[in-house]
Length: 353
Image (cartoon, rainbow, N blue to C red; front, side):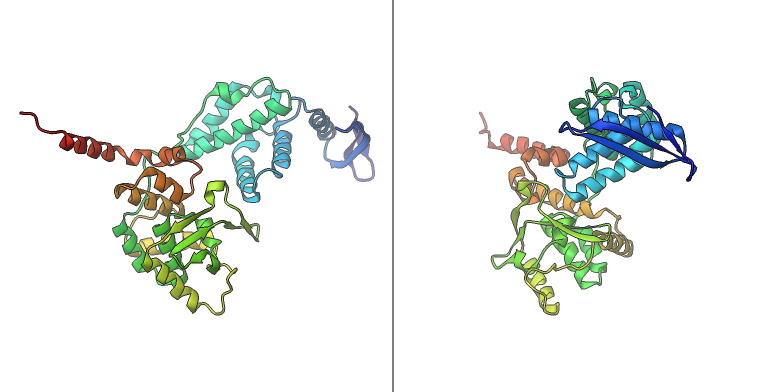
């Protein structure tokens, strides 16, 4: 595995032959390495990647993983996952060969990064799960004998023990402080429908139906300065949500005030960043606790649960893929409902003399 000195540039380069997955032989040359060791490491990683064996470094494994997944996951999903690895995982494990990453290595990483007190239990769970997914990929395609994360054990929590939500009274105080018509309507829609912010920002006039319902069939995000409208993550994300008459009237009043808006144009011109900024500003003015944009969705679900609506109806309204997702997310809000049910059964039993 030789490396060569580039006398003109004063750097090193790697040059070698390899056979690709179709059996075709190629010559590979890459310049610009500061040291001989870096040039040799590049050759070793490149060949290990071609041969799909566990001599590959974790950094190269992650690059290969995302290159493969780009054809299978949404662009926004890839971007979010990539950020997580770039900032929380690869800086710690990147130079290690995956065959040398042991359960003990994972435990040390967990202690160093995840248990530092900087992240919420649910975010810790997410990071650890993403790392485990990459090792599952290595087990399947790079002959890694086992996933070290499975032995190291999980950390974090799947669901938060408490949710930051607004009651109807808190929302009414908040919305009274919002003086921007577009932002005001956006928050009204979020609170009274429970839709996701990306679904809200993708809405067009054509999605508002005369029967006082909203068709949800797409999601909007801005990624690296580019506007992206994509289908919902799951089939159940495609749904029609009924709305109260006052909200229907507010939507139409706003659309009529927008100059020549077309049926297929986005109703709201801003991004989620604007919603975050407005929430913080108006919550402070209104004197209510500041919550995340996504917590408005939780507030809607909590309101429906408190009103006693069936969990299946709530699941369909939120666009969850199955009712288990709804129960896992909001099940902790139901204890009082179980007590109410028992009390009703008590009242139904006839008195015995």
